Length: 134
Image (cartoon, rainbow, N blue to C red; front, side, top):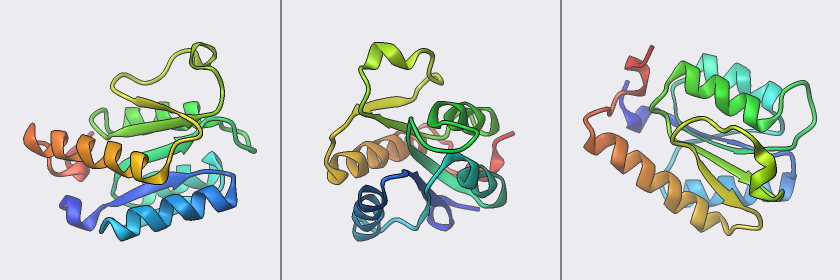
């Protein structure tokens, strides 16, 4: 499966912010899936080809955004991960290698640009098929 058949997964518990992010990605031409918590997103990670993950850190449920990012990284170590947080960065602890941390508030177009750049870098490295990982 190619990146054109893959999705960007947006995980954010703030409904308005999630809708703004989804709208920005769709306007940029991305296919998007969204979830309101990491537990919902986990099922999507294993059920579809997810080209990139954008996640909040603190959300309701059994799993937070950092745990979700770790699992996403284990499933595909080269998948772009963008972690958005309103908390001070030193309090985050360990994040998966290569993940990009954006401090909230951040404009949706900044998040889209970060994901676009990461996907271009992945394609330029010759890894254009996210389903080939594992």
